[in-house]
Length: 248
Image (cartoon, rainbow, N blue to C red; front, side, top):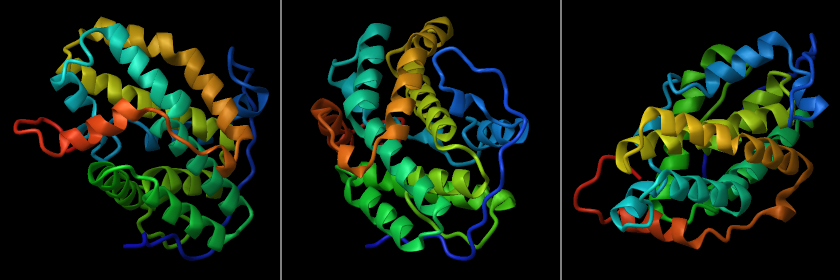
């Protein structure tokens, strides 16, 4: 079933009040106004009502199968998703949605939404990206400039970021960090990990998050592709787990 997409007039705003450059982040991403920073912090906060805490992205099945036993295992798992897995594809789709809205090209945005749904490698992954996207569009209505309808999560985030005048790389970095933090939070409950270990994982993954955001900002749909096979299998395995805490 095709995903419904954003409708209505697309407007953009201008970024101002550039901050000092941050280590590991390009000047374009660092040039973020206070208002834009606050929007990203709100939209991708764990408290934003999209229900991301209910999804483990297959990590629960990987733990159940004994693939993830330590914090280092979790770090490697998430790193693989960012470098060459579903996390990487999500970032490219976010970037494409951002370009589409910046160019006021609704057909291009519609194609990005359909592609995001088609690239979901399992029923659980499709449910995750569609449900999170629908919840994000609904919760972000106070910031919407037009009438928006449901679309996959990374496409919805990219579209709203562009319509709000937030730079592509900054949006990518914030999304990649939120993706990472959600999986680390799931690992705290499943592996389990202590809170200090979880913070250490986020710190260790910061350089990769920044580098991947820069790479995705310069990339295109030609760079799509996933080689994180164990993660895809885990996502499918999760659908038949007898006992589970998470929806995926």
